[in-house]
Length: 92
Ligand SMILES: [Zn+2]
Image (cartoon, rainbow, N blue to C red; front, side, top):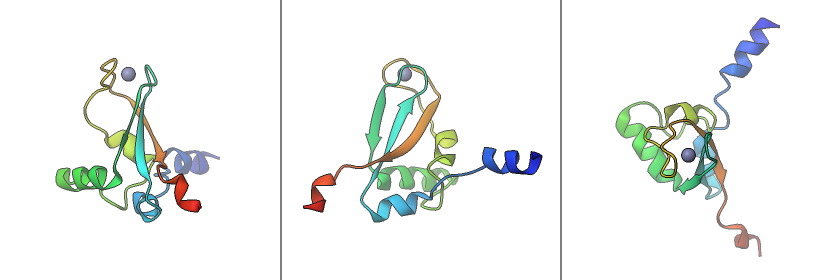
């Protein structure tokens, strides 16, 4: 179905606020060389708000299209975004 395909393409993903709640960060992975970097969620949200392009409501998938800058390893400019969980030890 065309409508379903469009909806999938525009799926913004889970809002960043959801990851903030569980103390996760954002992992940026370069599509070209797979180099990745983890960023604190607060930093990402603050930058989005400063640029006026998003904020805590921005989806984790949508975020990939809003990333500026280039890969520190290969200079690529296309990234995949995913949540990064740092505090697994908290479950003990
Ligand atoms: Zn790269």
